[in-house]
Length: 277
Image (cartoon, rainbow, N blue to C red; front, side, top):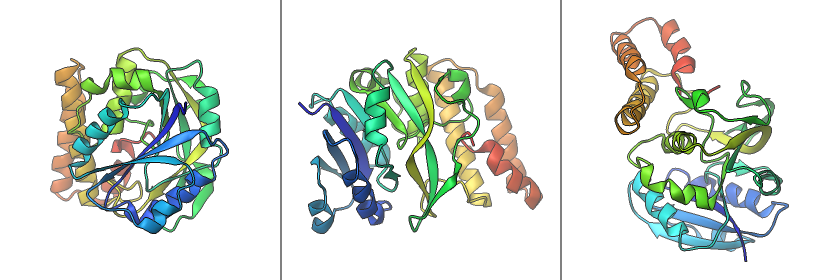
């Protein structure tokens, strides 16, 4: 009878934030949901498990990040959920996140909300929203996420039937798996809207895949590699023309390796990151 699933993955780097994640889960004003926890490559402390105040299911696995998500996604098909709410276990939710999502997804295939920025100590900056360029309640178009993204595993809610229908099209080897999923949704003509309401708190810390605040040479090279692999996949599998973008990233990589000015590198991290900020 429970139709709403909150899906998260706990891994060794995010495990230390699990307690604050659970605290935000317990505060939800909407109560009729199941928390699906994919525990990959680590274990959960019994004390933290005992603090969970909702129905939950723990799926333990020890795989690469992409393979773990793939197996967990297919495991979800064994349940009868109607809606899946994504949230990363190193992030937290506003207490009204589930209530808002359940209400607003009724006539849509998926919805996306905004973020607050949160530091590694859990301090939230409520004064500045993460995404500032997207209109409230606007229908999301592929062109908006062609080169950058604003749909992630902490601000996406999707109807389960839609989600399961595209699982076989996802490339689980890509680091920016959420971006891949978002594009495939739109390439299959599913309809979603962006709501300019910050209902998740996006944690920035040194062990993130690529921190927004990290503008180091190594971080920028990592971002370029992730985006290049992403563009190549969509060029080959979906016949999308990314030749210009791939060439531009290759040129940028050569410039960084040749130790160009620090000023350029500082500026480039913003224009070349995959988040549309």
